[in-house]
Image (tube, rainbow over all chains, first blue to last red; front, side, top):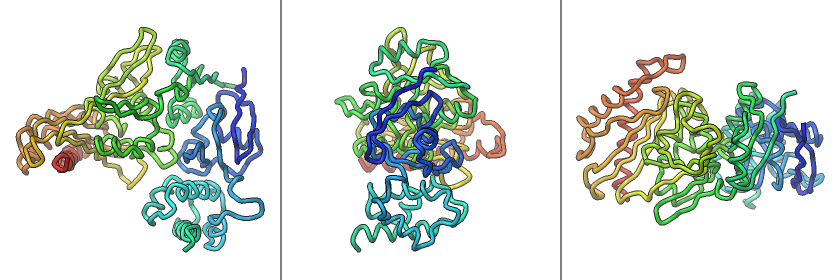
Amino acid sequence: MAKTHVTATINGEETEFLCDGQQTMLDVLRDEMGLTGSKEGCGSGDCGACSIIVDGRLVCSCLMFGAEAEGTEIMTIEGMADGENLHPLQQKFLEHAALQCGFCTPGVLVASKALLDKNPNPTEEQARYWLAGNLCRCTGYDKIIEAVMDAAAEMRGE
Amino acid sequence: MYSPTFAAPQSIDEAVRMLGADGAKPLSGGTDLIVQLKSGRNRPAAVVDLKKIPGLVGIEETADGFVIGAATAGAQLGEHARLVAAYPGIVEGAELIGSTQVQGRASLAGNLCNASPAADSVPCLAAAGAIAVVAGPNGEREMKVSDVPAGPGRTNLAKGEFIKSFKLKKPAAHSADAYLRFIPRTEMDIAVVGAGVNITRDGANGPIKSATVWLGAVAPTIVEVDASCIIGTSLDDATLAKLDAAAQSVCNPIDDKRGTIEYRTKVAGVLARRAASIAFKRAGER
């Protein structure tokens, strides 16, 4: 089976990979690129653990073919911290203990970043609706929302 | 191991040629297709991504109304202020599909051609008289959106045909639409019943001049309700009761754990009334 050659910018770096027609972007990230931060929870777009940002748009990487990435700009959880410096969302998740097992956390963080990129001053209701596609079975969500709201305030300089 | 070929044509002609092959499937947002492919329910020999074709993604406002690229994601519909103002019901239906992540990909053409009877964006498209522009081996043709679904998982598109865009006419003065659905939870579920209503009033404070009402999830395809009982009225209680009865009379739903026949039928009447009331009020505000 002929593979598709894809060139995409992943976390700021121009990247090339080969993929076959049934591989999702999540398969490519995890199996071909070794970027295992994005998780496969359900593989059907229900849980959000594989969330990435493609050309500024939050998507489930399990619901996108790897071959579709041609020419796109992609951000994964691996591109969130600036070297050793955590992104404010990551720091606030630690401070608020907004995670327990951590499996959903990369997806929640990427989704939260997409929210704050679009709306730096969300209401709690907006944050809850935006993150409704990210399932967490540990925290009960309250701490996640607290961390997101706190990070948003800090990023606004409040 | 199973693996389809993948291609992203740059033109309609190229896509038509590729989709003429046996087992080729068009790809828009992929939020249904990829799940079906992974589960083995749908194993296309070739996946043809339509999103690189000019015009397939995006919304254009024309002198006649709007042209929406078939593969435009739901989130893009919600970000288009003029479309939201003109067709709030179509946009609220499309935006009910899935999570933020799914909204970043899921399209009107995918929702229509996946052909679930419960597809949330379809009742209001039908109520608006939306036209699907279809490309295929015999050239282009136009179909009413309401003529596209043939039954669960089946459409009336011929082999090799695919939807290129949707045309929405410029809304008449004092007209608006609304969509309501019932689900057992608050978010991200499949409609047990959906109701889309488009109403034009005779002046901002006037009675209803014309109305179309379509229901989803209560029959193998969307079904139209005879809305003649509300024409010339301002939706008093007696009129709404007639609309309720008219909606119930066209229901032919399945009976499952998410809703019995009796329940779905009753809810269809309630949602038709409520969606009509919302559309009526909105129509008076423009």
